[in-house]
Length: 174
Image (cartoon, rainbow, N blue to C red; front, side, top):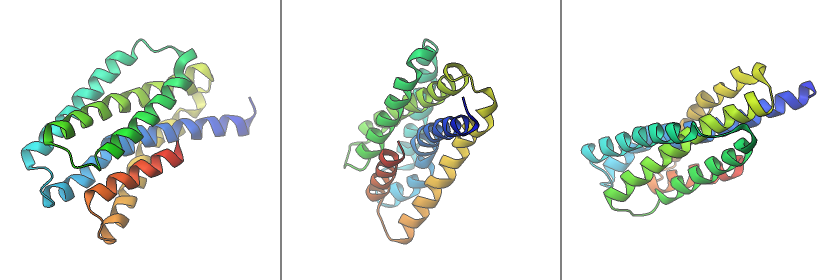
């Protein structure tokens, strides 16, 4: 594999982590105060949603232990599609129990992104030297989602628009 191909592979895997972790897991932290202000969630509801996300991440990690390198590419695609769907669904007017459920499912897809992208780059592609760039995807996703949400906030967008923005960027990046 050429140096350019190795770099492209590491960037692609980092984008999977940016989506799964930065958008799918950590963007809730920035949108949550808007949801509280809008009356979508209370403090208790937000705690339940965050806990569901952590539980989903644990469940996803346990389930992903059975993943194999030959299916890693497909699992990466599923993690992106699932994350985009969860982000988009959160833009809808939902009862609290369904928001909590969607956050749990988003946690499963976040774990799948972490395991699948790692399997694809490190095992299937055999590119261990790409690990630093791969895992930098988490921080890059947090930073990009935060900047997008700051922009949306300055534009006066409500939480629903913020979720749709993240879903749209996820689809484009994916």
